[in-house]
Length: 107
Image (tube, rainbow, N blue to C red):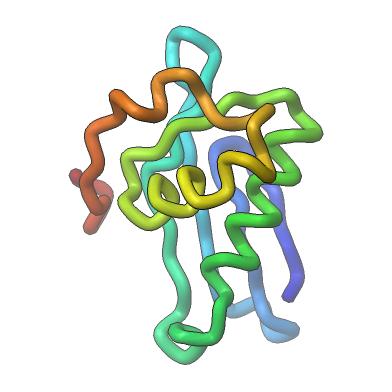
C-alpha cells in the first residue's frame, strides 16, 4: 500500500494509483481533529485494511501531536478499542462525540 498524506486526508493507493482506502478529518476550533470518514475499496473489505489504515492514521496523529475524536462510526469504535495503545491521541471529547456515517459528503 502506498500511503499519501494531504491536509485533512490520509489515503492508500495500489501500484496503479487506484484508491484502496481513505480517512478524512477536519480540525476543530479547539485544535483537536475529528475523523469524519473512512473508506475501504470493496475489493479489500474484510481483510483488516481499515484497521491497518487506522494504525497509520494514529501514528501520524501521534507524530503531529494531534488529539482525535471521531464522528465516523468505524473510527470512533477503533479509537475506543485502542485507547490504551494510543492514549496520547484520544481527545477528552471522545466520549461526548455524536457518531454518524458520512455518505456522499454528508452525515
